[in-house]
Image (tube, rainbow, N blue to C red):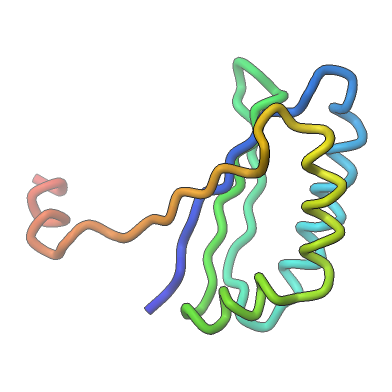
Length: 106
């Protein structure tokens, strides 16, 4: 089963350009991981300091490989000093149940 999540954080004022470059570099690296299916970076239209990153991995094992990859630690260490939260806030997502999906389509 795919592993899907949303990572959220808010950039501290004055760090917008550095975080944008850091995230862009990290996104290119993560997208090259064999188990990554999506790493889509968004900012909130009404607040461009608010980042939402939609991530999809082929499986739980692929997500575990992503977490263990050598590039994640340095990225998070640098990022944490430039965001308002203590770390990225992760929300793990699952698709609605089949019956729920049919109900939503009506």
